[in-house]
Image (cartoon, rainbow, N blue to C red):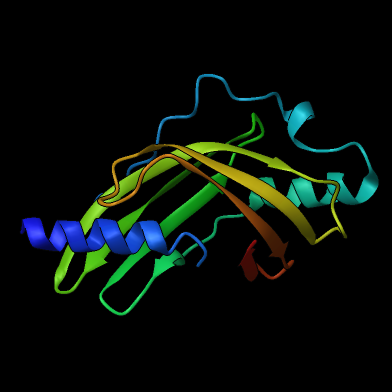
Length: 149
């Protein structure tokens, strides 16, 4: 079991670019909504889509032997986010939760913006607090695309 956990830790840390449901607790130092969404029209429209979004089956870590799959990933108006899902390694599945803060650059359009996601709380095997830059596209039909930067 220790060797699998070591393998998971080594793999998950190298892949930052790529039952019951629980949610992660929001960060205590979260920025206000007005600090999270820029004031321009495109950003405000993107912000509305973001608050309505739930990135289902999002895989922030994906590899041959290990995956982290969020069953739910939501964004809150106070600048926090929460995700629940599971780490899948070989034939084992370990449920977990993550949470943190988010911020965004002025949106490119009503559907696309570059963002920073800070992971400050996690109990997912092999994961540690970190910061990720992404370009997120949210379509009106619920489809989404995440490109890690």
